[in-house]
Figure 1 (cartoon, rainbow, N blue to C red):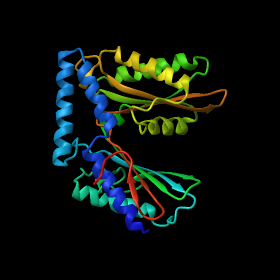
Figure 2: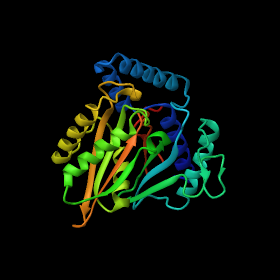
Figure 3: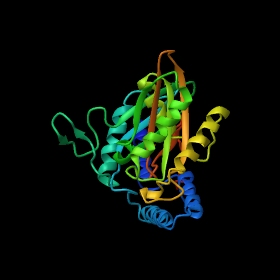
Figure 4: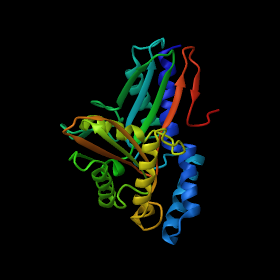
Length: 292
């Protein structure tokens, strides 16, 4: 087992995420196309599916905006490697930028200069988690700015609770309109503090679209929000139709009695993510895509 295995896996995940949508996302888009009642909306979904097919066939990025790169790292307490993981992820990002290729999207906001290789201060951003085990799970998550710009965070009044949450979510979607390239995936989280809610909302976007929420109350809330969002009629690419969102994912944290933070993370239809498990012996299992 060597650090090179982690670097190579990270590179492969970035390439997979940029060029091939996970099966659950492709299936959700196909289902939306088959059931869309708007002629214009159906035409947009047909174009999206063709875009997905060509990108996969030619191994080219699904979208010209290849996003800001994040990695989610779950590392077992008995995993044999700890040192040098971040550096390996940076090298993988630079290589993917050149070889996939990925559009350079990292701009230093002080110097107002593009770094040219998708790396820089806190970029790629890495979310770390330690658990009891001897393996490592790695997720590459390149997220485009069109949907990122439409994300919202609010400190709501505790007096309004779920009623206020639902209104905030729908108002956020109505304000976003077609800008985040619907049909979107919507992550919602409430409770904790502003950083906790934002982190949890974004993390929900990693959950496969065909995996129901295990908490019955949250599963019900997800269905209610999805129904309300799709009743807005914004539709695919904002041109009208039944499918404004493919899925809503919800999470929560315990809150302070005086606060009710709510975060809404919006993901465009190009829901790019790729995950792998690296075992202690150096073998790699790709979890979201078929490899080899």
